[in-house]
Image (tube, rainbow, N blue to C red; front, side, top):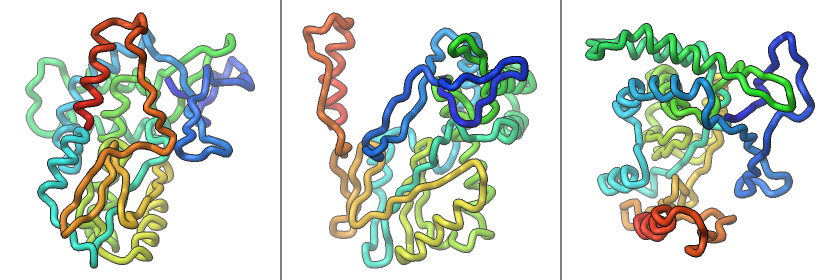
Length: 287
């Protein structure tokens, strides 16, 4: 479970100065000082079964999103189908800052309500019941720290099962309503818009100056979503790929963050053997 500045204690309790169990420093983004990701474990929490149950119903909606990317393999298949004009187009990636802990709870529940009540419902479980459970799991996120109890009043905890689905569905709603519409003065510049949760891959048809203006405009649309952009010059990193143009096509190599030290578990560890044997398999599959 992750805390954020958008937390407050119940009115009968006073906040403490130290709220987080620990902070995971993200030194690949900035070394001095590194931004921190506050972490509080949600394993075994009372609301997690509700989150898992709701996610089973939400996952099909996520996979139906036209701009949805499942994983790196999905990205590679997409890039194989694309041509790229380096004289007129630019690769660009967007990142949504602190997405999970910033999505508005009531607006996200409204998005879920509209999806659950759209079209024919083929499940025994009533959509109203799923919405009630999602409301509980999202808005009753309590945790204890230093003998005080806190309630998360905005966003969802990063450790909950349905957090990725909620984030995907809310950002897709924002995209449909505000970005890929005729009301967007920059919509004709966006040749490609594909997304993996909070990471967005764009092919921008226009100048770099126009792209910069677009990002400024994009950050005026929603008080909960803040975008940072990287414009390919000539390459961009997306998931674990480094994407660049070559002879009118987009090519890739494996991307390693500058802080990567290739540190893997030693085989002599007392971890389960299945886990140890899976490490080299996973690395070879990645390559």
